[in-house]
Amino acid sequence: MKRRHIKHHKQLINGYKLGILSVVAIYLATLAGLFFAYHSGSLGMTVSVWNVPVQLYPGEMGFGAMFDAFDNHLILNSSQPITLAIMTPWEYGSLYNCASTNYNYSSCLSANATVYRGSHINVWFNLSEGCAGYVYVIYSDSDNPAYIKPDVSAHYNPAAKITGVC
Image 1: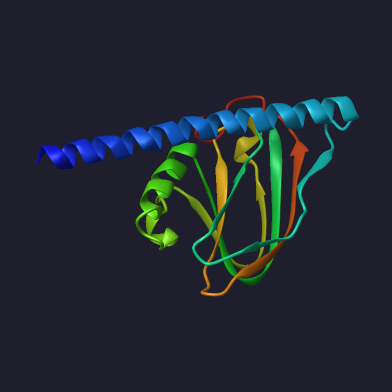
Image 2 (image 1 turned 180 degrees about the vertical axis):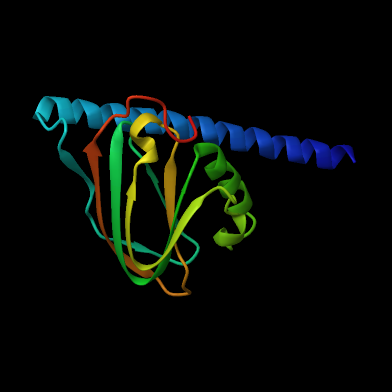
């Protein structure tokens, strides 16, 4: 009985560390985005975040952060069906721990995650306008590699109050 408890405790600690690192990454990415927007004079305008095609193999997962104070627009065109899941960093930590032993990512997703599936995904995500509490993952729903052509952008639009999970 003690062994199980110790093992479970270790997994929770690993998940917690991963969650904290994800939060730090979100804040750094957000600060970089704001710095760029401010110095380029594009406050209130749209900034391209990701437009370089990528190939995602079965069992691989892509990760990104939703920018705080921005409306995030994700357009993903893929050669194979893919899943886009938006969640908190803590939910990502749980997904990561589960996926390290279970390669069926869908069964590891939190019930609170916002999930989109298909070969052509076009999503506006606004809950991060007042909250640096969201990340996203992308993975292939196929046994074949997915060639993804992204057009991910962010429009500076800070909320007047806290939004989403914050």
